[in-house]
Image 1: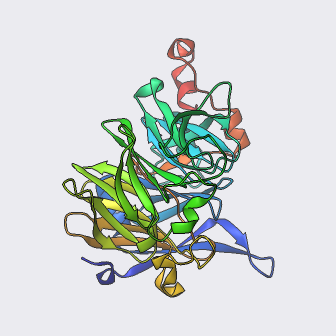
Image 2: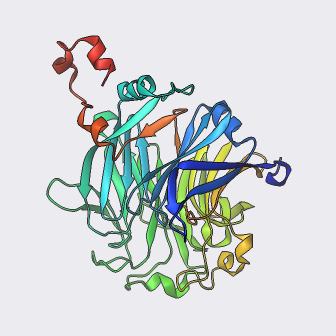
Image 3: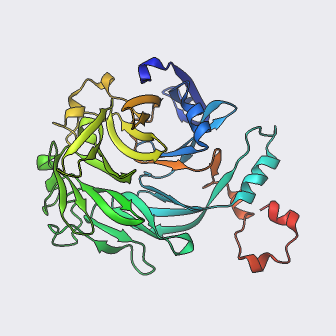
Amino acid sequence: MSSSEVPPTPSVDSSVKKQGDDGAPEPLRSVHTSNFPEILEHLGCSLMVSTYQAGRLVMLRTQNGTLNTHFRSFDKPMGLALSDNRLAVGAANSIWEFHNLPAVGEKLNADSDPPVTTQHDACFLPRVTHWTGDIQIHEMAWVGQGTEAELWFVNTRFSCLCIRSGLYNFQPVWRPSFITDFMPGDCCHLNGLGLRQGVPRYVTALGETSNARGWRDNKKDGGILMDVESGDVITRGLSMPHSPRWYQGRLWVLESGNGGLGYIDSDTGKYVELIALPGFTRGLAFCGPLAFVGLSQVRETAVFGGVPIAEKQLDERTCGVWVVNIETAKTVAFVKFEDAVQEIFAVEVVPHRFPELVNDQKDLLDGSFELPDDALDGVPPEMRSRA
C-alpha cells in the first residue's frame, strides 16, 4: 500500500524539549503512519537515526503498540555503525564508542517508577571517545568480527577513508586516485561507505575533483559511485549520491539530489531509480524486503542551489524516515519529524525492540562496570544483575 493509504498518527515526545519564543518548553513532535510501530514489532527491531542539524540521536521503538520517539543529545551526530554489541557515533570532532550492557537495561527496568511494561532489551553505555578534530565525519562501518572489528569512517574534509589510531587523530587507509594530497579541502565531498562480504567496497562522492570544494561546481549531476577495491568509478552523472549498500545481490544507492532510491544495473553501470521520495534522501538501512530511508527537508542555499529536490516547493519536501518495500517499489509507512528536526543523516536498524543509550546520566555511568569474566568470578550473581 502507498503512504497515502495509511493515515498518519500524531506522536509527541515530551521527554526532550526545546525553548519556545516565550521561554516555555515545547515538545519536539513527529507524526507517523499507524502501521509504523507494527512494522518494527513484526521485524523485532528498532531504528536509530542521527540528525546533526538538531544535535540529536533519535531512537524509534515500539511501546505498548505505539511508536516511542526517544532522543539523546550529541554535538552534530552523523555517521552510525553497529556490530555485535558495539555502537559507534560520529560527532562534530569525535567518535563515541558504546557497548551494550544488558544488565544495565535490567536495572533500568527494575528501578522504573512506575514499573515499565515494555522492557529494555539493550542498553548502550559509552566506553571510548576518540578525538578526530573537525574532519566532517560522514558514514562509518565496523570491519571484522567481535573485539577484533575495526571502525572505518569517511573523512570528508580530507577526502579519504580512515581508521582510528592510538597516536593520531586518524589513520588514512584509502583515497580516490584523483585525490593527490591529504589536503583538508573537502575536494570531492566523499560521504558514503558500503561493505560487501564484510569489507569496504563502495563509496560515493559529490564530485570527481582534487580542488578544494571543487565538487560544488557541478553538484547537480557530478556525483560518482566508486569501487574501493579497484579504484574505478562505477557510475557517473549522479545527483548528490549517498549511502551505497550491497543488499540481496544488488548495489543500492540514494540519488539524494532527486530524492531517489535506486540500484546500479550490473550490466550497464547505470543508475535505475526504484522510487522517488518527498525529500533529500540520505541514510539507508534494510531489513527483510523493506528499506528504511532518511529524508531531509533541505532549503535553497548555496550548497543545494540548483539541485532538483531543492527547487521543489518547501511544503513538498519533508524530514523523516520512509519505509519502502523494495519488491513492490511502494512506500508502506513513514514517520515525519516536525519543528526542530529538519535534516537526517544516518538510519540504522537495531536488532533490539526497546534499546536505551546513556551518555549523560552520571549516577548510572558511575555505578556501571564492564569487566573480564575472570574478574567477575567472585562477584555474587545479584550484584552482576544490578550492573
